[in-house]
Amino acid sequence: MSKEGSSFGKSLSRFIIVISAVGIGLRLWSKGMIGAEKLAIFLVLVVIAAALDSVWVKLILACAGIGYFLLDFTNYDMSQFQAAAASVGALLLALFGIYVMIGGMRKRK
Image (cartoon, rainbow, N blue to C red):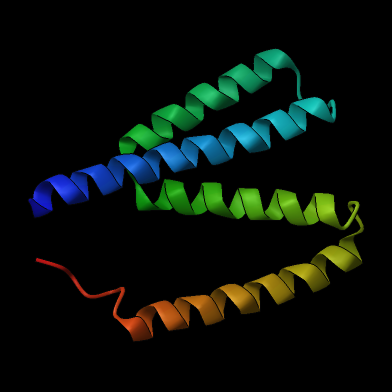
């Protein structure tokens, strides 16, 4: 039962990564930052990266999504971006600390 649950969880996390990347890609395309061909290539690469199931790929995609959101939110002003990035970084660090305290880093058997 636990193998099926973890397999379903991994598949779901991969699918969520693809959904997030589609949102980022469509936003870039709607703002005219990339063309439809580059969007298609980007989405194919994201699907391949999600299928590889690498922690580093997931981390890079998550950081790219947060970075793009912050750039868009601050209207591409670098001083505001740096301030927002510091705040979001502190929030993510606090959330990771809570995750560790609750026991999220323990291996489950």
